[in-house]
Length: 583
Image (tube, rainbow, N blue to C red):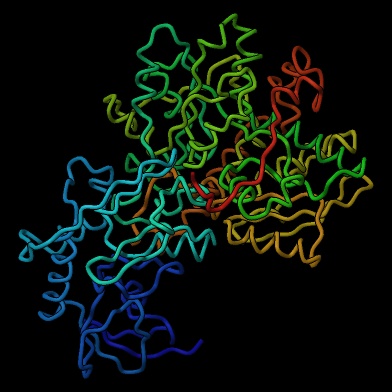
């Protein structure tokens, strides 16, 4: 590794050749403000907030794109730099909807933070301002162009990482906007609703559709039996909304908070993840043994399912027919649980707390209604739950831990790891290998499918069979994997795909971290580490050993893959037009 000698604000440094001034400054704990920058995703120098002065240069330079060189003398706080940053920020603010008190990103807004850091007390440039319509037709995502700062982080995420490309820059100059093709709503383009655009937006221009009032209304309705379930990834991120370190597990406090809010029962979606493994594992074995359509591709990620419907309809037959875990749980709650507890299914209101915005869209699918009622009534994100906890005046960090409720309270480590990329695959292999072998194994960790690499491959011995498996996270990687299968360059028996990079732990509904954290800390790895820690801490780590699941099959479904199981726990999907022509 070759190095160069530079000086930043009088501090002599030896840094790796080829890195940017911004990265060199960060390594030396010298702060340079940014707005559009997002490491490895959006490094275009568009916002000009990171300007620095370089001795001998004729103009100020954007530090996020300027590479270091031998002998550079850099000034990050000269009078010219400070004035340029202030003018740039004031110009951005002059055409920004400044309703900060009622903005969902208040106190977690990078623009707001910059205004405080740069001591902006007044805006010298007041002129025309844009007033564009709100796009709130999507069930998952709201787009407010009047808050947009044209940083293009959402565009880079949607196009370069997810390869969905439904939003882009349009027009020029003052008329520039970030919009969909033909000025359509996100509801009318092949958006996957994954919400990764929200996760990288520095302001409130993109946010999830807020469904918290629907939940409060249900809780206030004394005629309803309101049940809540929480996904595995929520417990390793919710704490961030209350100032706890990234990757802190708050399972017990989360359950306690939900109980305090008035839910009749607080359940763990991991229980349904165990049920999913029983159904999906059986489906995999049946297809392998009976010459069924291979590879079997997991169907737990609704963003991936919608992506497949739009872009790869030829793979729809490969999808597992299993509903996603929270939808499967909703179906169970309105059938098995309703019968067991003697409650009219029409009186059961199911709330899912998910790390995912796409699950809001999923809950509205007509094919997910086992009883003729929606399997899940409302989906809220991790962020929405945090807002509800704060609204209820709950001192979250000082809550005593509480367990999930019976009779569905037991879940396994296999269910927990669904939250990380590779987790569904590993959970399935833990169960399928023991079913085929007819015996228990002590070594149940499949390291080959773990980690945040975009595409992972493994060949696993299951009895006399060799199962070729692949795992992809992020829709761009899903596209690469599916294209290689289509081209005959790769062949697999079992494929796991999650729409979000890193899996559900990095879902579009998780707490938003600023670019100053996101660019230098791998949220995916930190949250996934907590997921695997919870797995190891649990007494049961295999789905088929869950006593709740055993009882469910003994008393209700009969066996995995039964006719009754298919009626309640399975579904189907259909091809979608990308840009349908409206009448």
